[in-house]
Length: 304
Image 1: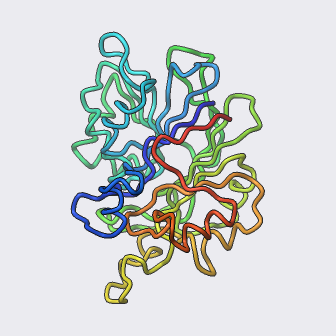
Image 2: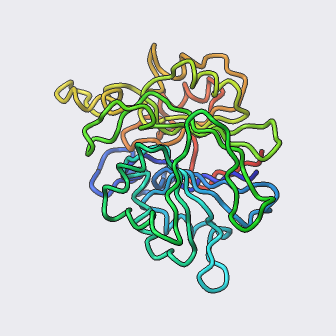
């Protein structure tokens, strides 16, 4: 399968429109890459890039489609985007549904857990994706299912949604409900090579740890490097990474420490504009590279 990183940033992107921090200014000046909000595109091997599945759908999706030729429309109103699978209901992951509201004729389907579907349908901007010819399909937890292009029986992915520690978005009160946040284990039909997409998680539990270990490539939550980087002076404790549902990459209990010695390919994505990992000269960036892990960027592409 072909995997394309359409966006590698957390909500707001880098640079963020209302931020003048060092990371945002470096991106504006062209010293570091610009990043749009996190979305992943995957195409099964059998489709040869003709049909694509999006994992999350940021509000930057229109620009992301234009920047990647295989996602651009064919003749008439055709779109090669067949389905959208959501990891959670955070606005930076579902905002693109409103952008794609004119896609009725294409019949794009959305898959998510029941919890995410309930929250999404409560927002009027996204409710039309439950109306024909679109479908909003409930994704079972823990069961591998075929996710296929509707009109090509040979084009499908084997996908498993894994419940991970997390909560519903802040606008929904941050309820700790199973299925509010998931990771996706993705493979071409019959392939042993697995891709894990886990851009959001509050902690690595045994289930997620097992999925990371068994993945050939794991895209993981890289939102924050430290728990307090949004609040360096300690004045806003509610803005800590863990309080917002993200395990930090660095620190004693962080992802790098937990995955020390991992032999598979680890790629951090969903980076917040505050993250020192964005600066190639920072100690945080050096620590990630020294571990053997990578930092995703817009346009990154790989084949499994």
